[in-house]
Length: 212
Image 1 (cartoon, one colour):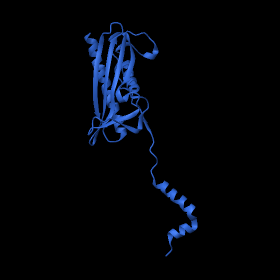
Image 2 (tube, one colour; image 1 turned 120 degrees about the vertical axis):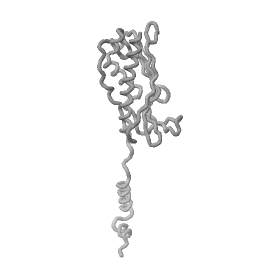
Image 3 (spheres, rainbow, N blue to C red; image 1 turned 90 degrees about the vertical axis):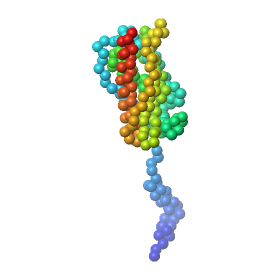
Image 4 (cartoon, rainbow, N blue to C red; image 1 turned 90 degrees about the horizontal axis):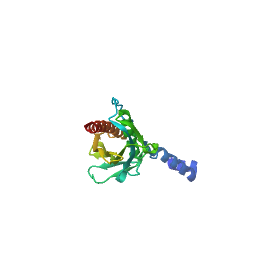
């Protein structure tokens, strides 16, 4: 019987055999993990109000991430078996800081609704009568056994620039169950949750301004 290992050594020699083994190892190994980048979807389309409920202009002056979210672009998650521990995914990131993504959705949603005579961002340098601020406390994935939910926590405040009267203040905490364990299912859940948040903001802000 022919000795196959001896045949390989005889035909290839030690250097050739080393190259062959490296090639075989390369064929059997998985490709290296790569970074993945995610964005949030557009806000839902809303029917504009017949007329603005606030006849003055409003400036979105700040929308600030708090805690670990400040300056963070990695997707954050918590295993609810250890709910006090917040972790980050090493290779999954938002295309922009979460506060910027959520602020953009809020701005487009309120502009569609037409609840203010004018809604601008701070960089537009237009003098406004009211200041709108936001604080983002959570935008994360939560692992609950075999289930995955996504969560949002954010506070909005609308203040009169001159009198400092608070016309609106609301703290929101929302969760949405993902329909699967894949990251694509979590992204779909983020979009559904933020669409629901926009609806709640529109309802609450409309009611607050009508009352006054």
